[in-house]
Image (cartoon, rainbow, N blue to C red):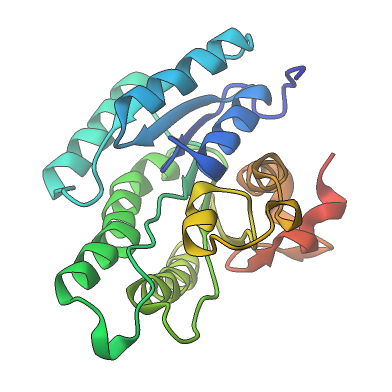
Length: 250
């Protein structure tokens, strides 16, 4: 796909870039001219994505492997130091990494699994976002996009609670940085054709699911300067569904 200059000279960190929405968003941001920092815990998958980006003729990406289940404050400090040394600032952060764990009723939910899911989906995202805030504040205009979900019905367990916590964190953070250069928003992708979705709904017809490339275009839009005002209203602190932004995507 032909590259553009919409994100020229921007550096975007994308978590969970090994597969699915994260991988597609990394490709889309790179297509639009950004240098993408691709995070994940599976190095071979990140290396494959690195090769795909280079083969497409886009800017050379940066691989940053990190296991969210084992992430420490020291890991986050190192991440901040590496990005500051290499780029001086950060223009965008897509908090996309997530893990289902298992669908289970609360009364039967394995406690160790609960803690693992909360760590990957909520705690690690908080720690990484906190580390990136000084870098985002150095940019003239920057964006944080949280990948959210509304799974607050039976059997969604720790995953549903973690995603509700992420939405609260997004809204609290948006209030706190309202008078800065950082724009904060959330995206609910909906039913997307990913391995994550298939594992949760194995009997679902894949033909009814949204392609990851379509979600990537919306995520990239929210990471861009163009998204600061949507339909004549500030996007800061707002959560959007995919169809709400379809008119803004080329």
